[in-house]
Image (cartoon, rainbow, N blue to C red; front, side):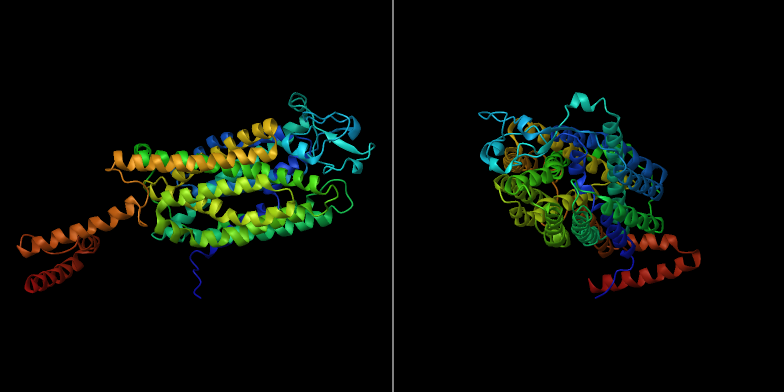
Length: 541
């Protein structure tokens, strides 16, 4: 097996970068809830962060392209993300009020406020407290003297400095995260050069690392938090600091080239005048919405289902770590490895349709789970839903990128994607509050299926109404690839035809360009070679 040493540093970056975020970032919504933030406010926070980061990521991408300072922006954002993730651990919890469960308010229609309702009722509604379905439908297991944490209203949280301290670190880490994400993809495509289809083979190393780190981090948190009332994420924070510090050293020594041409605003604007590009932008928002719904509320749903299934469930973090392991190692790695081949084979449109359909199935299955261990097999759908979508968006952005705007285009499409995750947080939080957790996932899943049909119809209409501007790749080639391979062939044919009537020498444009770059002593020799080629061609004709 041949090792690609040119791309080895980039693979190492992916390994360290995702090993540094895997143990902690998926648990941030759970950590926010544990520190006293309500589920509804968690959704609002995860809505604000992506929209605020839009300004940061697009500005950082444009700055990197304009100043040709990709490495400096890359390193700065990585250091900021590391510092912010570390700061979250030291953010103080919002002091909760303690009340007996007998006095807690259970916001379910048809039930009294004195006792928790059975599981079927809890499943249909939100509960005013940190755990939904705490008693699992068996009220005899809920002693009246038990304590539960009551969520503070948003108006009260807004007056607490602990909330704003936590919000600051969450916002800062997310801004650093999205800039790192854009710059690493831009640098990776620059290093790949004329082989962008190999992007998935580089990115999959980050997925492997992320899955292993998440499983290890979840198990360590469970072990470290044994006999404690709440989970202590200290082992995860240690892993974050260690791996990301090593990644800073790797990024500082990455070798990649940056084109001398500076970003052209007119070229970027021209890209987004294409109807097919704008349709892809809208689809990216929907894909981001689905990812935002899962990323923000998935583990909250898992915790609620686990608490309802078994109030003494002691392997919660291990289960969540295993879920991430299945997502990354079993589902995402093969899909990333095959993503380039798949997109070439079926085209971007069919790849996005496949992702949307799988998101529909995945979210609907989440809504049906009552035993938390059943979440594990559902995670097998993560590869086709998320990995194909993410690789498709990144590759599509690279395929339509004007020269000199590499980081800018990745930032724009990445901003659109994470803007979609913000919409997912907003919609998910609102649905969680109005209809309850499982119905929220069901509604978003059905919405994916409906949009998939609308997207197909819109694509067919665009291809029919604007045939001069081809849609994303058909039969494995995008518009730029087709143009780059067909135009030289036409040029060679014209040159050969001209040679046959002895109008011009039968030399290719590449030979002309090479001759211009040689010294005067080599020009005469090149011309003699070309004349001999002309003689051979004419003779053969």
